[in-house]
Length: 311
Length: 293
Image 1: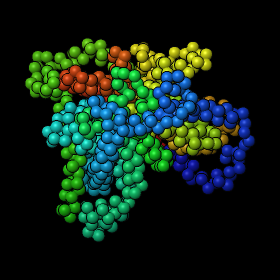
Image 2: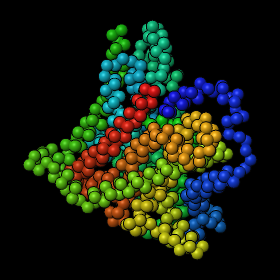
Image 3: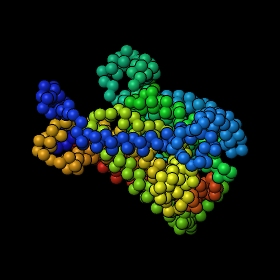
Image 4: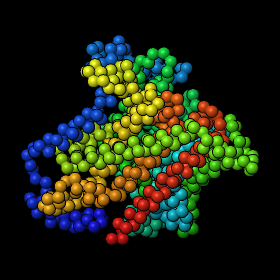
């Protein structure tokens, strides 16, 4: 039996199963051994997922002396913010030692133009492809679908040449623009899928109202896009903030985002590594997307799955 | 009315230009470069008598062979994330207690950059100060020094990738499980079918679509894997953790060999499509079958 017909039937018999509920709905059972087993197993798994975060947090508050004792899981004997201060103000990335704050602000200044650029482009394109009769829309959609899967490496060199010719290579703008370009296919597919469910009645009414393309877009479509906009925003904020490859390729020396600074910090092999500094730097880099995640967890799931399923 | 036909086409122009230039044109450009002798700077002359020289060299390069082998190892290893994700989703779905807490905990690594993930695991796997010394202190003779040894370094990368992505597959699977009618569970219970058989013979076949989606995303993630390698091992020790994505960028930036890097990039695209076309065709076929009923 196919999944489709089953879910169909489930919807149809929704009311019925409600009245029959006492029979079939999971009983409010007491705690059985199996429940305990499942909960214990899940808790152990949860521990596995929490350990790295715990280790990073406690290490960042330790002194280097305590770290050398080798008790990675122990709490700090002396809690100190020295590592955080060092990571923010003095950590070295390459030859410069100005701390992660430089990269942090770079990441912020990459994020905003990139968000505006990528989302507005994808919104307009998705709208035009979903609701207007453009003859080659189908072919273009297929092409976008293919582009969404193309590995970055194959377009990397031409993009470097193009950004160099336009003199933006090595600046924040290059990173921001390349993010927008690479995200365009996926975001367009997401918006297009959202808009294609808008009833044709609304569109014809808007057309009768002598609505032009842009008037319909700004007066009807944009106000209707709240939900999908939030989802796409979360998707883009996390993926732009967490990116490394584009930042390191197009940021040059002055336009590097925070992740590139952190990578430089953790991969240097000269001298003794100060793990407290590294862990504080890792946390500083991780905090912004984690805040987004904990604030809007449910929408975050929607965001990544929308981006993942790609139309 | 005429205006209404021109406006949408005008609105599509930027996206069309981006697609044509940044994607189609750039792919062609790189493919063309892969046939030339370009080194640091591009050369646009093709010596047709030996147009395949970059590919010839590539297939004989031990580093490329390692990269391909690691790609397979990483793919198989990361597939554990799907299995793990399914088990977690099934257990959470079965035992509704604490659902939102577990979901939150399992999924948070996905919100974090792979560079951060790499930094954290690199620290835990540190042989002298990390988990190994702690466990040895407890009297367990374990060997966690994976990162320094060529034959185990890939395991560390797999561990970090599974940790990062298992929650994501859990979320997809949980959505799939919730779409399954509760009557199926009751019917199976009434018939006294053991749970594991219900999963194996009914639930997993019903969730084929979700599994294929996960497989597509996994394989794309594996082919694109670069950040996690840089953060964990930077390709080392030696070349033992090279993957095609790393190989390509290394050929371009460290070796400044443009023609060679282009050939590797073309091979990456080819691998993507070899994996991706059958899977997408399968998805489309499944979807059509589902809609036909």
